Image (cartoon, rainbow, N blue to C red; front, side, top):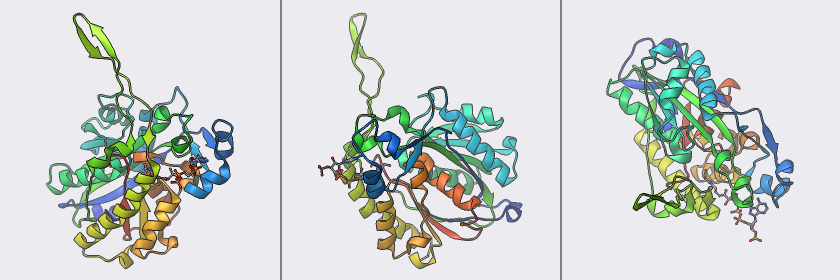
Length: 330
Ligand code: UT7
């Protein structure tokens, strides 16, 4: 997905394009370092840092909710965009870990005071944010809505098997949000979406209901298993497919990789970020990475890293950002 940021003052006149007008993020206060995790499972700070680039992760406490994180990120995005919650037409929540399986977006819209907004959830795991951005663009480009608040948020810690060192070292919790707004110039320059369902089993958080008698019948009781992953397969998939989809998105945007100011990938593994940058011929200085602080926060990872980079003054209005999610689906 290739996009560029725009200054708020140039967004006054609505048009048929889409631009990101503001961003925000949130992470729980609780932090678990690699050394602390090494007391729980057979691993080490050295292994985790070398293989993934992760140093610590933020984890929600039992009483904390995904909605709370999402609302905090959403509020920040509204403030940066300089828009009122009542002006939001649609709230999209990209998450695979909603507080409520029926969806949490409309509750979040209500908590934000986005009283006019319709809300729905998008489930696409670590790619949820970029899928959500493509969805937001369809509503805005067709003139149906002018302002969409897109929030990527996940609390995968709820679904991690803390005895599985192959997965538990990777994930953390967080939320990130962007205000997408109609704009005379279309700042979503091009996108490409790709799925390979034949590899679905490589990364799952699947339903594992047990039979329960109801009268003469047996129905399945509701429960889910823990995250299960074939890490090597997912790694191979990411390193092969992410450069391909970025090349296709660049082609649609009529741009070359040299014109990309920032490579903003889903924050899963520093080695994946480096391998993709190398394949695209981009220097490491033009990659965004906050893995060491947060680990893999699933649908939150791209907007969380985007928000940090914008607030640090790295990503500037007018610059070209190539973003890509990848993960479960695959
Ligand atoms: O957002 C979802 C997308 N997910 C991803 O992008 C994940 C992609 N995959 C990866 O990032 C990497 O495959 C991992 C970080 C998950 C694993 O790294 P790897 O270099 O592929 O390691 P591996 O699975 O090949 O395991 C190498 C060794 C094994 O030991 P043996 O069989 O060589 O003796 C593992 O048992 O490392 C061992 N190992 C660990 N050792 C210490 C696996 N996990 C750990 C651990 N600590 N946490």
